[in-house]
Length: 437
Image 1 (spheres, rainbow, N blue to C red):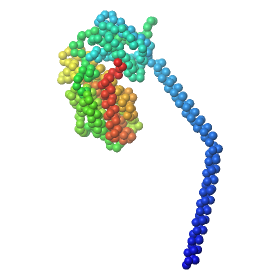
Image 2 (cartoon, one colour; image 1 turned 180 degrees about the vertical axis):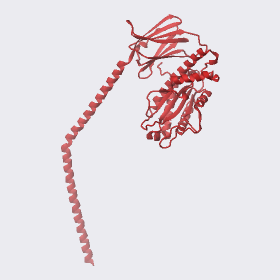
Image 3 (cartoon, one colour; image 1 turned 90 degrees about the vertical axis):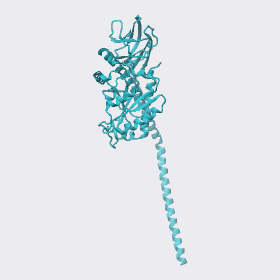
Image 4 (tube, rainbow, N blue to C red; image 1 turned 30 degrees about the vertical axis):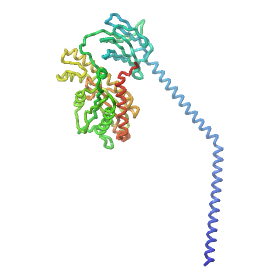
């Protein structure tokens, strides 16, 4: 028995020795192959380094070429942009001042007035800012000229006035001695016993809080857009609106009012009427898109179009109960011609203020997500038709896009969106015209 055990132990020992020899042989062979591979790698190292240097050099050439092309495009656009080459101011009488803006080319312009204090606003499209605006002669009507770049291609000019004026603007074509010119005539006037008070002036005149009407789109039987995961627009707009309401009410100097606070249906005109009943300064309608193409993604902002304003003006005149606007214009105390002019001025100023607010909000939305439209759009939307209340229609994203739907269902993301919207509102309230003092 002892001999059997001894033989078994010897056999096991010999087997282990043979296994160990095999492992050692395999290890030696693998080590030799690894050394051969390292030798080959060292032999090819200069070639690898040369290929990498060539790749880096190619990337650098491509970067320089892109910069060259971008610089060329910027220079091309700059060369195509009209330049303001001079400003001339003349006072023909104490009741009349003429301002001539000399331009290097044709330019479109928008002209409107603001009061308290009295100002004339001129928007020149596609015109570069110029040092020519640095120093001007004061007149009995004109006290100062300010300017700022309104967008990347537009110039805003503000004429600070010493009293009420009736402005007139027109373009003159080049002649033998002068190039393109924009002529602004200022006529002293006391014709309007009830000045047109714009939304901006109304806010500055108030001593109370800025009141913002938040309008969560759809509700009740009107679900709005529906995403692939079943996300309903009416629910997500209400969630976003409540987050925006919390931010506004937590900020000193601001107060929010909701057009709806639960899942119930409210007609479009009723939403605007509720906001005006509370004498809201700003109206922010929240929505989500549902494009047929799921590839569309990003936010957009709309304000009222000129066609929508004309339709609403007709409705105001047709409705005897709507003769008094919040801005103080009493239409039933004036003949139809004067009333129409006053309402038109009020709507023009409201649309302009809405465009400014929309630009601020859109810029801040671009910081937290993609933009579907990089410029504020104009459309005939019922929610925007109040002639005396700055109003914007904010589309947050496309629920037909699966990624956007998943992202916009997140409370964290909705919180960021609400913060961005309020940041735009706050910027606008503090600097409505986007001007340097």
